[in-house]
Length: 556
Image 1: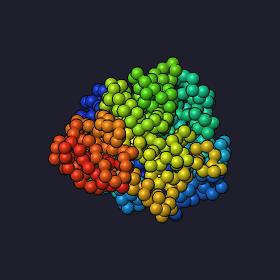
Image 2: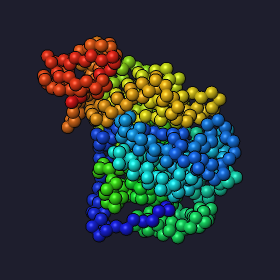
Image 3: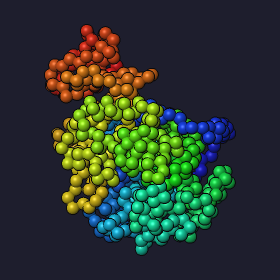
Image 4: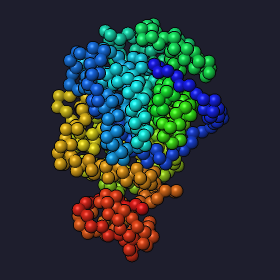
């Protein structure tokens, strides 16, 4: 890392040691339940390069000048652009609890041509885990972004990779053979054929199964030497391996480098890429080391820390989802490789991305909500988190890519039981089908800020904002138990121990409407409709709302 280590006071050092001792005392215990906050959280997922350009001066770093295929080159988005939107209040108005960015570590400098001419704009082709990619900004930019987010009550999640490096190019060397493999290619038929293999010809698979000590690649040492930080990096590595006792195997280097970002800048959690393609034991180690790192950062930066929630880790286990979606076992929510099942929640994950939601959302609203409530309240999911989504950067089956059901999709996602992932631009109906964009590039168009001049887009954004702020204020929305009150009009409640209950109505007629609430709120209770802004009192077991909207969001 490039930054200068923070000098701790004696009191801070004692607090840090106490935190570490407490954490080590629990290292062999089972993982705690996911907090209500995260089981209800709204996470805003953005591609750093595609969201907002805050510094045009870094757009062509590393001489990435070759013309790429459509939407397969760097478009200019960066960390400063995210910070500007944080400070402008964009995320707060949307009710966002956490921002998840694609990896910001330094990417390969060249391009790959195995699947159209493509640069590493997406962040998933690492070159150096210890540096920020200059196209995205600097470490100072990252520190400023996290500080700005925390000041506004927003947590920051960063995408992390242990499975693979970026491809070899004319500008980028292949990592040594004792670090990576390029074959066999995965054929997905077994555990080994998902883990000890290369995902694609463009990706070199890190030998994460190895416990054998390896030397650092010469190209990396030379890079650090030229940047004037070789001695610092080597000293930090020596301290890490001496403290932990881990062998100097590839995966432990990566754990050290990834948790440095937490220790130095106070990142609140990780979204783990390609989780099922790595032996799960390393994720538990990453989680514990991240908890230690966050405890240290909070002790040294008490004024910048945002509460005391544990370090959060959400995994991408492709084809996993609730109710046995594709390769998940519906009886125990394990991932089924065919010859082996893995319970990822046993390896440090607080939540998994629910890839089944896009296939379930086509149901009527009550069937969707009641099924999800039943699934998440069942023993297999009790106290565990998921992230539902309608759009994603790599799911070609993302829901409503033509943006034909934008209002209903927003309601179903934001009011569904479970945590939610807003994919950047869902709230503005950003195009998800781009003519002549090949493959997943069509899912990754630039943020359509220009559409905010249109009244229809402004109205849609306000819809998302009302839903998001309501969810944020009442954890029962995502983490509570669903109960239908009446089918016509459609009214339901959500209840959660130690939190306030809510009543929600949908598909209601504009104008005067009555909602039965006697089973949830006592007579005379003052409530607010968080959609229209009106305040009403419970009278004879009902509330009466006069608004032009089809939705009512009731809470104290």
